[in-house]
Length: 247
Image 1 (cartoon, rainbow, N blue to C red):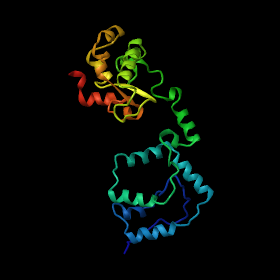
Image 2: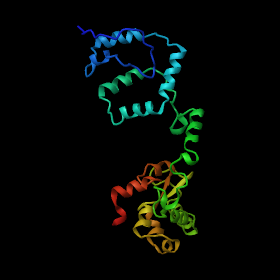
Image 3: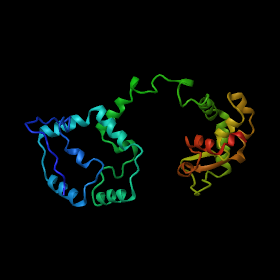
Image 4: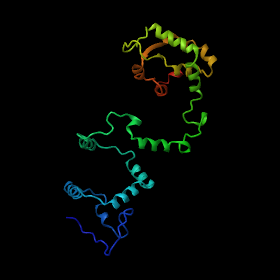
């Protein structure tokens, strides 16, 4: 049986923001304890079908929008790993229910209103990256991107690319797709060659034979190229894991 806790007498005005007020000690009876399954079921049944007033809904919304409340909620869940049983229950609860984000990916899974809000939050001085250029930006890699673009936009790179396509008969070397949108990919990654040879200017790039070696190139379709470890930004992760630029 539950121990009865003496509650303060008199009329108290309930303040949604405050929860328990001075003198309300009833919650301490369950501190560090857990309700039984039957007790939780009874509490759940008592709340089922209850329609809250507009005033209570408004107060709840205002409380949830307060920064300190949202931060407390975030910190309370930070680093918490859900048990397999909990994940299984969440999965079962979602079965048979329509998913509003089905078929949508990334940014476009949000509503138009949400995208506009996200855009405004990251615009101008609200963005921590605002005004940070060159070596002041944490993504700065010592000017590698600049020489990267200079090489890829050069005539020599265009000739190397065309030579790789012609040798492979404009056919993807992985899936066999012929024609369409194709990429000329460096087998020994482009960024590794630049970093290993300390190429900072175009004159150094033109003298690097490895960079223009056709045998180091292969024709890939876009889908096959995306599956490689060095596609786009993945090359930097590849570099950090393999340390190949030091070889």
